[in-house]
Length: 162
Image 1 (tube, rainbow, N blue to C red):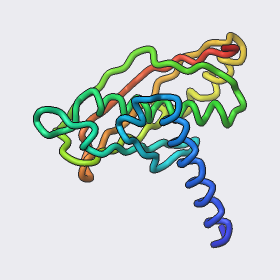
Image 2 (image 1 turned 180 degrees about the vertical axis):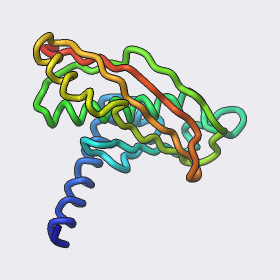
Image 3 (image 1 turned 120 degrees about the vertical axis):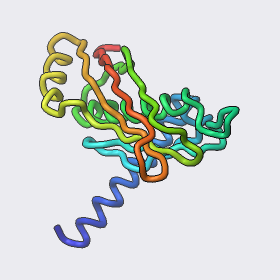
Image 4 (image 1 turned 45 degrees about the vertical axis):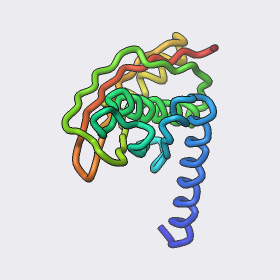
């Protein structure tokens, strides 16, 4: 890859990240209240961050609901971007999730989402196109200060025609 091509790809990634940030803040008020930022936004991974101040609890650490919400937003955003890239209009909702808190967070934290099983994407899309409804699992890792602070696993349902 040439330097010019690498710069164009980096610029496109930055534009996608800004667009996702603006979308989340405009359509999901909690994202604005949490002051989330989008660090990475592409079809392979989404990485969001949130500062401590608007997400603090009575112990001066990140509120568990904010940690969980950031993980959910990262996972939802990954699916949102992938479905949009596939040209599939949909309604995407979380069905269930499990959040494990590993350690306290007392600063800016991030959540990075990836498909639980990447090979499940094509069957998911096929089922969604055939039946108008499909489920898929997404993982997210919450990090703080370079270490894992939490694990998230969620199932999402996509519906077409809505």
